Image (cartoon, rainbow, N blue to C red; front, side, top):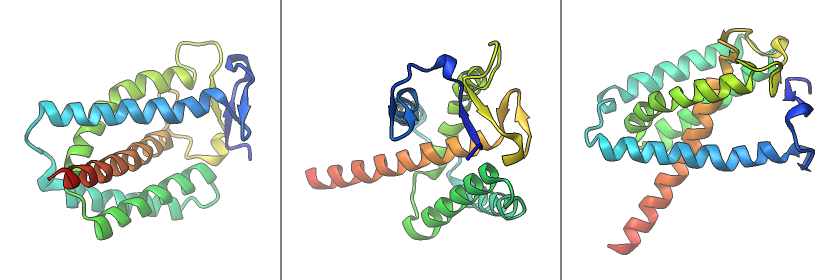
Length: 178
């Protein structure tokens, strides 16, 4: 749809369902590494520092993302990413009511460090041409260096979905051993 794409100079040319193999591997490796980071943060920080602020953080994210999504319906990447994340947060907050959101928000702050480094390179920092290109007509055009701001919300949602699955499986299997 011309919203974003890949520079063929960096690809092997192997595709599955019209996605390059590198993108498929991304959806395996990155969530795994992020869930590992989430667990490491929980291991080293026994106290959930952001738990008292979880409702405020989640509420603000839902409102801000919803307003930005609906005020940018003509920008596909912005509207779909922000609205999807807002809806997932609404589902979590009102239906699932997880106890791990404070831990997630804290770990996401740590995850932003490698995110900025790696995604910066992928979007063109320090290389001749970007590995992943974005059509600024389909996003806000606001960049953190070379990274569209929407990528941080997309990353948050991707990681939060994986953490939610991880926590559900962990709860299920811990409950069956007791």
